[in-house]
Image (cartoon, rainbow, N blue to C red):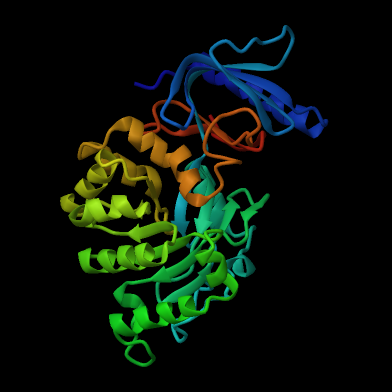
Length: 370
C-alpha cells in the first residue's frame, strides 16, 4: 500500500516548489523528514531527518534537530540515495567500441560521453542518478570506463575501470584473436611489460571490469586476475555460483543483469548465492530504450527468488558505489556526501512504487506531476 494521500501530495508539491524557488534565489538549505530512510549501507531509520546545505548532506538520522522556520518537507513515504548502475551504454549511440580492433587499451569512453543525450533523462526518471559507462564487449580490451551523473552535471571519474572481455563476442572470425587462447595471450603480453593503463592496473590504481559469461569464461577471468594480483569486477558471470570459492578468494566483485521476464531461474539463483557467500555485487542497466525500469526490475526478480532485501538495497546504493569506485561521493546518505536522493511513495523494491521527486547534489531534477 502506498502511504501517500492527496493532502500529503499537495504539501509535498508546495515544498518542492519552495525548494526550487529557493535554489533559484541562491538559497540552498532544507530538511526532509521521512517516515522511513534507507541509508544505502543496509541500515534504515524510522521517522528520520535529512539536512542538506549547498548540495551536500550535513546530517541524517532520527535525532537531527530542525530549527524553527526552516523549509521542511514531511514525507510520508521512503527516502533513499540515488540508484547506481554499475554498467551501461547509456547515450553512447554506437560509440562504445570498435569491433574491428581487438585492443583499445588507451581508448577512453569519457571522450564519447554526451551529457545532453535523452538516455540520461530517461534513466533519471527511473531513479538512476549515477552510472558507469562501459565499453563494448566486442573487443578483448575495450578501454577505460567513465562514471557520470545522469543529470549531466558531472563526470565523477573519467578513468574508472579498464574493461576487458573474456566473452565470445570479443572473438572475431575476421581479425585476431579468434579464440580464447589468443585473447589471453594478448592480455598477458600487456602485463609482461605494462605501460599506460596496464601499469595503472598492475599497481592497483585502476581496477578491471571483465566481461565473462558461462563458467569457463568466469574461471579464466578469475585465474587471470588472481595470477596478476588485479582488482576489480566481473560483468555478467551468470553461473558464477559454480566457482564461488575461487571467486570469493580472488576478492573480485560481480556486476549482474540486466534481467528480464524469462531470465533463467538458475541465473537469478546465482545472485542469491553471491549474497549468501558475502561476495559484493551490483546491477547493470544496459540501456534506457526499454520501457521498463531495468535496474529495479532485475532486483525485484532476484528478491522473488530469495535475495535478502537488505542485500538488494545495498546492491542498489552503497554496494554499487563501492564497485563503481565513487563511494566517497555517492551511494549512502552520510555527512559530506553529495545530496543525491529520491523520495518514493513506497519501498523501491516494490515495482508498484515510483519516485515522487529526485535530487542530484541537492537540486530538484525530476518531480512527478499530479
